[in-house]
Image 1 (cartoon, rainbow, N blue to C red):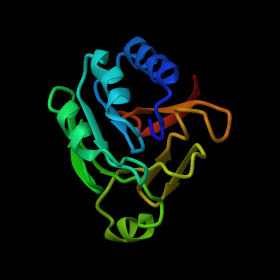
Image 2: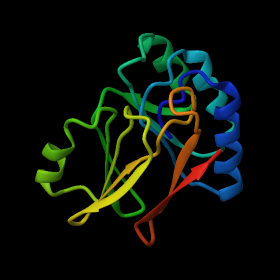
Image 3: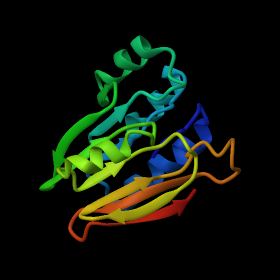
Length: 156
């Protein structure tokens, strides 16, 4: 998920979907906005990894909330999960640089509010779109199957 922009109703819908799908990890590509909106992710029942977006001004508040939720930091957040290497960022502009490194199976980004899934070489690029739905009028998230390295956009 990405760009939830304080839309509590849509964040709650995303949490329900992730729980129904049995997600083992939830990833947020930035722009929560206020720390209170991150509190809604407390019911996930799985780990949460996130990066700050360009609109996340209250970073200390988000860091405090995340002590009980998972991990949040400045991009990039590089990690491994289920045998895959991930690079999590907010802005799409550094994607070419990360692709040229050739060491990531999945790059997840946000910021554009446009859902997108594409493969470049061995790397799967995922922009889940905007969970909040304020800008484009469609609230979306992406679901990734790490076993098949395939993803789909889901409308909330």
